[in-house]
Image (cartoon, rainbow, N blue to C red; front, side, top):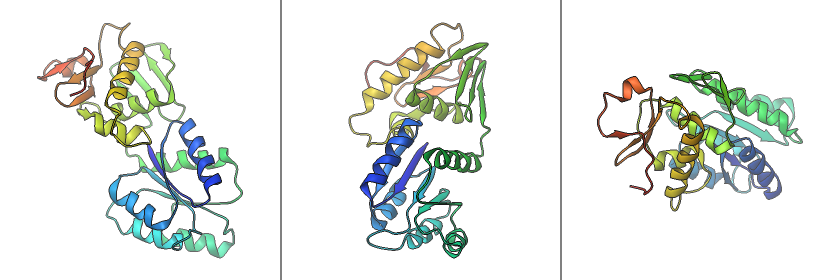
Length: 240
């Protein structure tokens, strides 16, 4: 899941970035309205957290630009403007939620998760063969065995399971899981895939994570993947 934080106050932006990254999300920071509009034009975000008092334009103008897109992400306004009229105007302009400053991070995180659940058509409990992932509780089971994953490992696995049967390039994985550009991250994707395989595949007879030669990786039940061509369950040591 990738989140855009639009906040000009560096202290708050850094706090939000660290907190959301610690919760397993990829985060971009836009310090002003123009940057936010450019970010949303270049990248498909799962959620935008938007301050209203930006140095170059009113945040509601940014919200209007986001809402002008055919399929924009949910928007959570985070603002010191806490009057009823401000909240009503923000919601009527197209925001999905409104939280006033100062705020408790645990409440912000709960609202973020609620908006992401609302925006996701996929079920919150994902299943591939005997591998189950609970997106809400962030739990992973293979058969009757609980599997502990680091936040980035969980993010990759969730993204793959939401797209089961679909080959995903390293670029796609980085853009949805990491909070930085693709350049230089090819090898780290392969490293994390190896970590995932060691936890959810290596000790089990049925392998679920497959290498798609020339593309990247895919997760699929073995009875389906056996009919596809160009698949290999062994890890790729060199990027393609």
